[in-house]
Amino acid sequence: MSSRGLRERLLLFLTVMGPGVITAFADNDAGGIATYSAAGAKYGYSLLIVLFISILVLTVVQEISARTGAVTGRGLSDLIRERYGVKWTFFAMAVLLVANMATTVSELSGIATSLEIFGLSRYISVPAVTLVVWWLVIKADYARIEKVFFVLCITFFSYVISGFVVSPPWHEVITAAVTPVLSHDPEYLLMVIGIIGTTITPWGQFYVQASIVDKGINAKNYMYTRWDVIVGAFFTGFIAFFIIVTTAATLHVNNIPIETARDAALALEPLAGKYAAMLFAFGLFGASMLASFILPLSTSYAICEAFGFERGVSKSHKDAPVFFGLYTIILIVSAGLVLLPGLSLYHVMLTTQVVNGVLLPPVLIFMVLIASNEKIMGQYRNSSLYNSVAWTFTAVVIALTLLLLVSSLAPGFVDQALLRLTV
Image 1 (tube, rainbow, N blue to C red):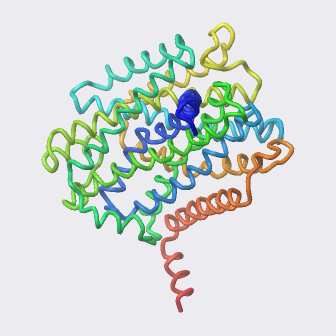
Image 2: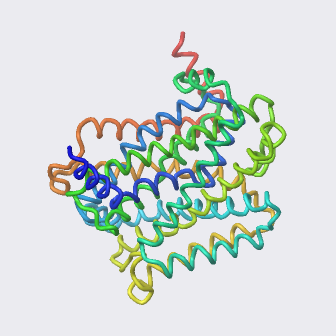
Image 3: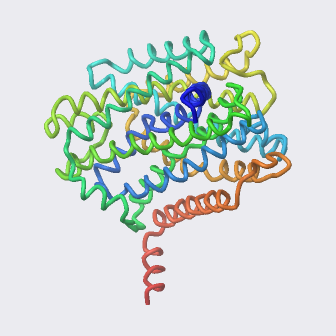
C-alpha cells in the first residue's frame, strides 16, 4: 500500500473514531474505579482473570452494537420497538432507566469524592459540575462535545502511571491474570458481578449504537468503526488492570481496608507517595466527568428513540424538547440524591455496578436476537461464534446472579450441594 493510501485510511479511521473509544473509556466510570479498587484491595490480583474475560466479551458485545448501528442506521431501542412491540420496549427502557439513574448518581458521587480529596465540599462541587455538564451539552453540537470527551479520556492514564509508581511484583500479577479462582462466597460473587457490570454496562450498548447513528457512520466505513471498538475495549481493560494492580500492590498486601474511594486514594500516599494519591484522585475526577456526560445522554437517546421523539446533541432545544428535557431532569434528580445528607457515596458507586451486572442479560438478549436476524442485518448478521460467546456469557451472568441470591439467603445449601457433587 502506498504512503498516500495509508494516510487516507488513517484519516478515515480518525474521522469515524469516537463512539467505540469514548463508550469504552466511560465504562471505567466512578463506580468502575470504586469496584476495581475494592477488588484489588480485598482480593489482590485474583480477580484479574475475571477482568480479562470481561474485556474479551466487551469487545464482542460492543462490536455487535457498532455493527448493528452502522448497518441499520437505527438505535437499539428503535429496533426493539419495531421487532418486539411496545410492551417489550417499555420493559427494556425501564431496565435502562433504573440502571442509568443509579449510575448517574454514582458518577456525580465520584466527582464529589474526588474533589473532597482536594478539600472542596460536595455541596459546592456537585451543583457547579452539574451546571457545566448541562450547559456544554445544551450549547454544543456532537463534534464539539466529542472533543471534550477525548480530552477527558486522557485523564485515565493517571492510573497507568500510578501502577508503575507502586512497583508491583509483575510475575505475581501475570500468574494471577491467567489463574481461575472459584468461590461461592457471597461477597466474592458480588464483586465478580460488580466487575462484569462495570465492564459491560447496559447503557454502553445503547449509547455506542446511538452515537454511531448520530455521527452518520454506515456499513461502508464499518471496518474502521470495528477498529474503533477494539481499540476502545483494549484501553478499558488496560486502565482497569492498572487500577486493580495499584490497589492490590499497596492496600491488599498491607491489609488496609477501604470504606470510601477517598480512603483508596489517601491510603496510597504513605505507601506509594503523594503523587500516586493525587493521580488516583485526578483519574477519578476525569472518569466521573466523562460518564456524567455520557449516562444522561445515553438514557435520553434510548428513550426518545424508543417512543419516537426527536433526539440528538446537534439538535436545538426547540427541535428536541423531550430529549433535552429528559437529559436535564436526570441530571437534576441525580445531583439532588448525591446531596442527601448521610449518603455513603462509596457504597452508591459499588452498588450501582452490581445493579448493572444483574440488569445486563435482558439487554444482551435483545441485542443478540436483533443482530442475528438476517432480515435486519443481511450479510452483516452475527456469526455462530459471536452468538456462542454472547449466549454463553449471558447464561453465566444469570447463573452468577442466582448463585449470589442462593448463597445470600441459604449459605449452607450451596456447601451441601457441592459436597454431594464431590462424593
